[in-house]
Amino acid sequence: MDLDELQNAWKKLNEQVKKNALVHDQEIQAILNTRRLSYFDRLVRMDNIVIVVLFFICILLTCRWAMADWPLRGHMILALCMSVLLAGLFGMLVDLHHLLRIKSEHDLDRQIENVLLYRRFYIRRELWGYVHVVLVLIGFFLLSGNVLVSLIIVGLICVAAVVDYYQFSIVRDILKDLVRTNQELKQVKENSGFEK
Image 1 (tube, rainbow, N blue to C red):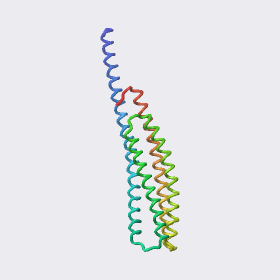
Image 2: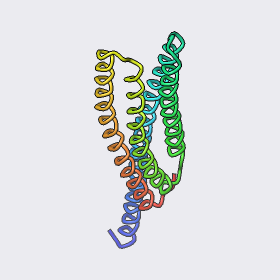
Image 3: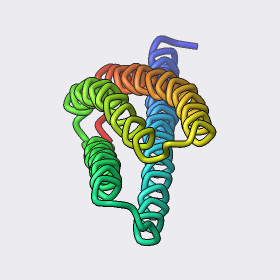
């Protein structure tokens, strides 16, 4: 084998390696992009579940309100509870809108920045959610006047707090994984020089 044949074989081998590396980078990008979209879908699904539950609670309270023959004080307390729940529902809809806007963002740097902003917004919303729960709890205590009903409400609130903590830890982990996946995807795109 002379020098020219060796150089040609080397060039073919080098081109094959570059071609395989590009395909490998594209596969990695596809996997990371799928994982990223899966994280967004999980967050949207969780928000949709909370929105449906809040909407259902608002409907139940509205039905109870329509059937009640309470004095004005009872109607005002239930109106306060309904307004707090509607504020929570509105907050969840705003949260869902932000999440869908972040999902549609194509610039990875901006998406990472927006996910971090979303995380801060989510933590703030969770804290205000507890203030709303306390207000609704006080309203139900004032409405019920019955010890058994009050204990049932306290039990339901405790169960809701445990579920909320579980959901918060899941969302926190998803957001952390989402940021990490976006950073990995950005690094792969920068290293390959391939922009999809």
